[in-house]
Every structure is written in C-alpha cells, then in structure tokens.
Image 1 (spheres, rainbow, N blue to C red):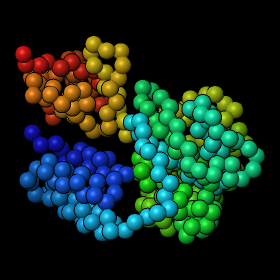
Image 2: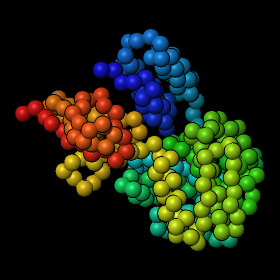
Image 3: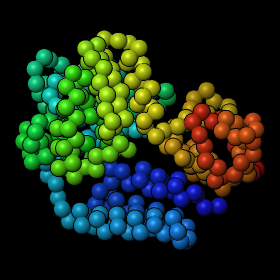
Image 4: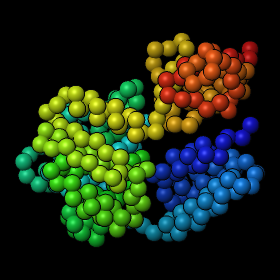
Amino acid sequence: MAMPHQVFKKKCVKELKGLFGQKRIEKIELLQQDLPDYSGPYGQIRKWLNDQKKKAVISKKETFHEAWEVKKQGHYTFALVGLPSVGKSSLVKELTNAKIDIAAYDFTTVKPFSAVTKILGAQIQLIDLPGIISGASEGKGFGKRVLGNARSADKILLIVESTKPWQINIVANELKKFGFNVTKENCLVVFTKKDLANASTNKFTYTNISMFDKQSIEEFKKFLFEQSDLQRVKPFDSNDFVILCEGCSVKDFCDSIHKDLVKRFKHALVSGSTKYRKQKVGLGYVLSDLDEIELVLKH
C-alpha cells in the first residue's frame, strides 16, 4: 500500500534537510525510487524532487569555505539565532547544564556551541550561534560563518528580547539575504526576559521565557518538543519511548528497531490513535504521539 502523498512529501522534506551536494543528490535518487508511479499529487512530488536534484547539482559545483561545521546530533536540532546579548547562551546553559561563558557584554559567544538535552524522551540538540548584526549576510561580524552553520538545523529559533520585538525584522532579513526561506514552518520566535515584558508576533509561532522562572522553563521545553515534528511511540513491553518523526508508519517503527523486522512482520496491535484498543493494523498505518504498539511476527 502506497504511503499517503502528504506523508511522503513530509518525509522527503525531513530527509533532505541539512543535506547538500552529492549526499543530497543520492538521497533524492533514493526517494525517487520509493515514489509510487502515480500521477496527480505524486506527480507534483516527482517534479519537486527533480527540481531539487537540479539545484543540488548546481550547488555541488560551489564551495563555501566560511562555515564552521557543527555535527548534527540527537533526534532534532534547533539553531539559536539572534543579536548579541539577547540570552541565547543563558537559554542553552539553563536547558542543558552546559558550561558556557556568559557575561554582560556583546559577543561573549565567539564560536558555535552545541549541546544536547533530553526533553520528553527525545534528544534535542541546541546550537548556540554567535550574535549576528545588520550586514551579517554580507560577512559583517563573521555573519556568513554564523548563518552558514544554521543550515543543518531542523528549525531556527529567532531569539529576541521581549522589550525589543523589532529585533525580529533584523534577524529575519539577514537570514533571507543569506538564502534561507524564512517561514512559519521553519522558524520560531523565542522572546527572552519575560520577567520584564510579554511580547507577541503575527509572523511566527512564538513563546515567552524567563530564566528566573522555573515554570516558564518547563513550558519552554514542552514548546520545543511540540514544535519538533517528533512523536513518541511506546513498545508494549518497554517503559521507554521510541522517537520517530511525525507521520511515520508502523514500517518506520520496525526499521528503527531492526531492519529484518519487516521481513518477519505479520501485523501490529496499536492502542491510542486507533478506534479500538490493540487494534490490528498493517505496515502502512500512520502512528501518532503516545501510541502503544505490539508487533506480531512470523516464526
């Protein structure tokens, strides 16, 4: 049974994120092999993949020497981008207990810093990038190095002081000039210093946080997980969750455990998103957050 076209498109976007050059081309070719030979929505996805491949071939010929590479870790990666001294490092330190230099002056962070924290069972990576300034996309203040490092992130957190909401425009514009497609889907706004003021924006999904409020920090952790496109699936015989991307199927769950499980698969019993408890489903069934699953295998 073919994967629903909306789920397949989301899978394509997820798996291509952060890939460039030859690696991106190879992944596109694998996705093209999995694409059902249908017209309509699948035809549009096929055209989109072809366009992505052409762009990847062109970008393969270009070399970018200024990016400081941060290795991607965990289940999901957020890059923190903002002006100097807006609280990026304080936020990462509070969430991860990482040892980061923090001071009351600009440019305390001079190189990208990566840390991983566990949130609701998922390993979430936070990349603390040095503060950017106007003209960063043109190289001012090592801006190209800073912005180039955000490319591998799954989503970008625009860190903005709650008392200076206009900072959103500066940061978003520099990202756009650098070639990022700044949208509600891939960028979130985090207003820091909630203890001084609450802020809002109509352009992006947002939240407010204060480093002096423990409840605020816990709410922020939940916010990150909700925006991560991840879901937790619990094997019936385990207290631990298997972390999958949103829209994943029973087959994806099997593959995450062991590649040979699909060969032995008979059916699965799923509770949570199903109409009945322990409802029998096949490999194509799309799982939801907090589903419980039991695999029935061939002997």
